[in-house]
Structures are given as structure tokens and as C-alpha cells.
Length: 141
Image (cartoon, rainbow, N blue to C red; front, top):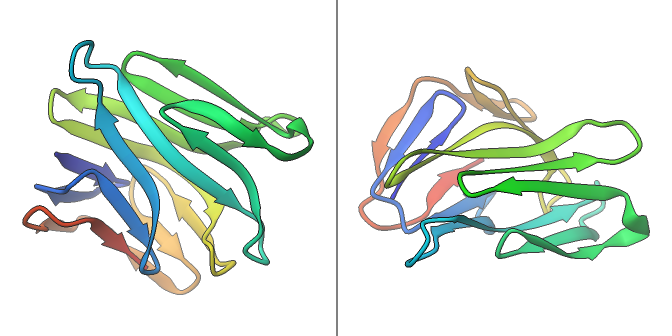
């Protein structure tokens, strides 16, 4: 599976996005329906889990502060109070998924920001990268 994060393309991944060495997002397509399936853990700046998405369904949602909107080919997670988009994923092709927008903390407490042009964690950023990861996770940060 190819994963696009901002303007960076990670080819031939196993569907996992590792952030600072820790798997934080897992992407798959349902074998029968092709529906996008997302597993994601949301953390606060101290590394405490605030919400967890399993197979595109919000399973843990502290203080009901987050909402997930999903369709067969997309998923968006928002902060209810502010409306801020924390995670936006879209199927671009049968074997390609794009993380087009995001703003969330890593398990280490750093803020990851994804825009259409780049991903950025603190002072690290990548833009326009194309990398074949040969069946491993897409690793950022």
C-alpha cells in the first residue's frame, strides 16, 4: 500500500505509520467491501491517551471530546468543542491512501502537523519526499 503524508509519498508500506518510532496509525482496506479501516491513538502533550479509533470506530473517547466522520473512502476526526480537524484520511486509488491533514500529539508529546505540502514535528519537517519502504512502516519523525 502507498501512503501519502502531506506531499511525501511512502511506497510499498505495510499500512502502518510510525511516528517517532512508535506505530500510531494503521491503515487497511476491508477485503470484501474496500472500505477504509483506520486504527489510531490520540495522545495529549504528556503522552496520555485521549481517544482510540479501531477499525474506523471511536472506541475510547475521554470526555466525549472527539468525533469521527467516516465514509467508505474517507475518515475525519475532529475536536468537538473547536471543530479542529485532528486527522483526515482519504483513499486516492485502490492501493493508495492519503493523510491530507492532521494535527495531533505523538506518544512522546510532540505536536505533529500535516498539511497539503509537508509534515512537521517540532523542528523536523519533510516535503516532496518519495521513498520505497519495501513492505515496512512509513516512518516519520
